[in-house]
Length: 222
Image 1 (tube, one colour):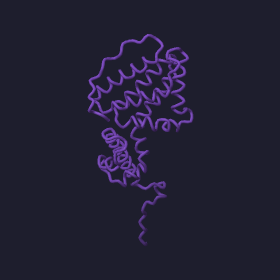
Image 2 (tube, helix red, strand yellow):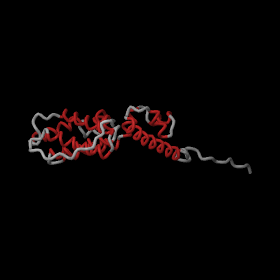
Image 3 (cartoon, helix red, strand yellow):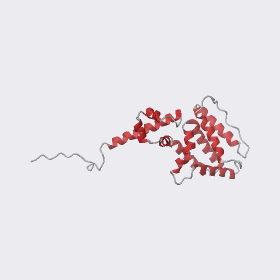
Image 4 (cartoon, helix red, strand yellow):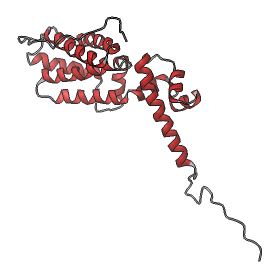
């Protein structure tokens, strides 16, 4: 009886799946996670304009691997700060749902300013990319319109002066982002005082006491 030919599993026998594919996918996931974590660290230390090669070295991967996962700097920056952007997006939703417009606006700005002040890379990302980060969700209006709506509610409720403009918040965020080079506790304390003094200048009610000053170090800049 002639010997039967050996039967090797084919892609059809395995449902069209390469048996090594799960291991390859797991390896690719690990590389992606390492690159994102390295990008967070490098961007926090050097800002979002840091060389992509620095991210690759920190992650322990080659440049080809990095660019295969993230073809552009924008793609890497968005992935690195996805969590912070999600926190800010949720804060917008909570502010819009708050029945007290002034309180909702304050809590939103407190979260955004604290995130900016404690993460050197996040400040320019929020200023440049937050509207785009919300754009993938068709049920969410752009960030500028949402912020303008929050400000309008607070003005109409009589909690903010009529001349307060959403562009004033841009000035606040630029100042808050400059605190990122300070020690974390100092940056948070300074951010709270900055926000309180900023809003007190625009409130119609009698202002309360400011938070205590923070021991800022002028030489430490982002």
